[in-house]
Amino acid sequence: MRLTLRADGAADLDLVWQRYSVPELWTTWAPQIRRVECSAERLAVGVTGTVFGVIPNIGAGFEVVEYDEEHHRWSWDVVAGPVRMHLDHRSEARIGGGTSTALEVEGPAAAVMTAAVSLVLPLTAGRSPAKKGMSIERKAPKDRASLKVALRRP
Image 1 (spheres, helix red, strand yellow):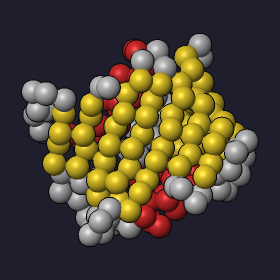
Image 2 (tube, one colour):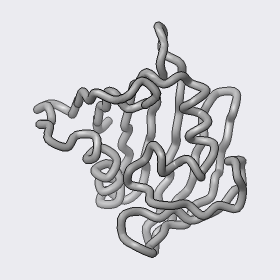
Image 3 (spheres, helix red, strand yellow):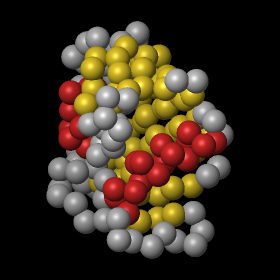
């Protein structure tokens, strides 16, 4: 299954890219990530590590398989037990300011939907999803890149 998540926010592209590129910063923008152990301080092709979520001491191994600083895009393969997923992140500056990001997740349906819920649920607490697809508005500080989240299944 393949699913794409999109987010628009007021943070500028350089800040968003810094938050992606430095694994130590992932916990500052991804509430489902509790800690990251990584073979490098900054992402690059071949960097490996383990990302830990909400279940204590259970991690998923990862390897960065694509990293394009110029085009603000990176991809990684994530393995948790027998489950393998491929995640592709893209960011671009928005006209008028801010940044648009997209995350394409590919893997077994149950894993993809679990990942989607863990990404969207913290942003949608107390909100009702739209009937067609999902579009949620959320107020956030200006340095955040998560003001609007749209969840669509291609």
